[in-house]
Image 1: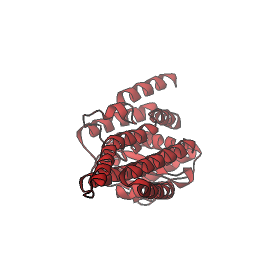
Image 2: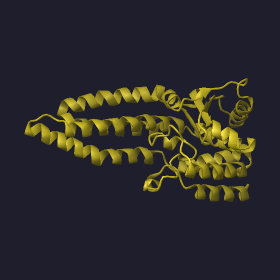
Image 3: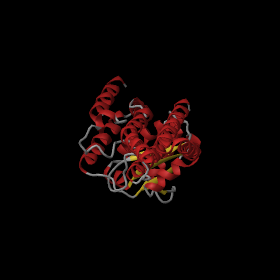
Image 4: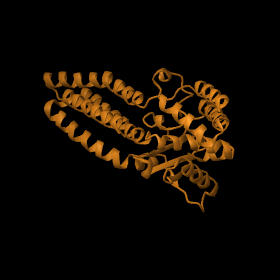
Length: 281
């Protein structure tokens, strides 16, 4: 919860700073009100927004008995409330968890994951997601997704304002400053969001999954397959704002500097740690 509060306050300050650069005190006040609204909205509704973005459909014990049974078994083992279970209509295998706390959690898996992985591998992946729920990672991930989208929107407003500002010299100069700040600050803000979701949480979730299933090799096998697909295929509705929520970065196959700032450690490192954990267990 402390990490979430720090993230919300930091992003509110960024909003106000950019709002002031774009439109002075009035812009700062508008940005402040916008940030307050985003904080409230993201806390209570970010999970629903992300699930809707990926057109996830909630399933029941009758409609998806095997998937539901795995999640139910894992939640009992972890001592957690039963989360809602969703299936995402995408052929690329991946999964994520969301929600503001374990009592309001949801886990979602793509159709591709259910089709490509074995039952044991699926259990390894879902155990990873249940570990995120157990460690309260899901709220900050959901909040970050909403704010990342909002920051991208604010950057577009600043750039448009810089191009289409009023004709007076002072306004053009102010618009230009706002545009420059958008160009320079917004990527930094996006990086702050990315790095606020510490890479260590993925390692901890992997470790938690190994202890939940008592079979680290299940998750190891699943991660290898997921990484292979992520290198060659891209999810239909994947966005950079929500990439950090997935067990495997859906943009793994795109060559860039993203690896330097990615919230996901390399799959190779994750497999190495799991292999060591397997030997210890």
